[in-house]
Image 1 (cartoon, rainbow, N blue to C red):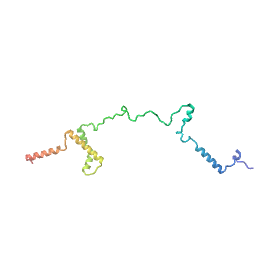
Image 2: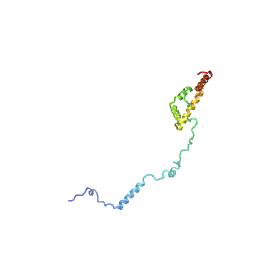
Image 3: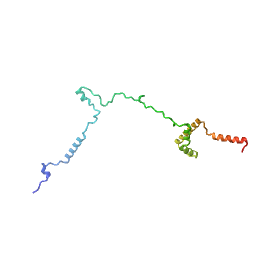
Image 4: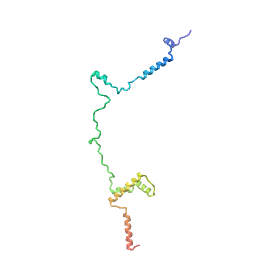
Length: 165
């Protein structure tokens, strides 16, 4: 005797669906899946119509923001106060002059300029600013570049006038 398979024993025989029926069922499932979620444009829809009839109170448009004025500028009381930063370090002119004269970067750039090398504009501007500051400090201290040369020239003139060596 032939035994029944467990699948047939569970329930009545179901007829197999045709290809057209399977395709139609798939289309129906796809359509149902497509229409899930909120309707498009829900945020912009006028939802107040339903509420106005019930309560009689018109709600403001939720798309509009606050009507509170906003200050565009910073009030003077809240403005950060800039602290005065000295342009130069607080050194005496003689200390600052000594520091500038012993600056290794300035010495290296001056050596490159004297040897005829071209330096970029940023370094050239920095060297000019440092040299200008050295001139200012020397004027403040009453020094000049030609002090040594003038003294030697005066000594040479004195020798010539005295008839010395």
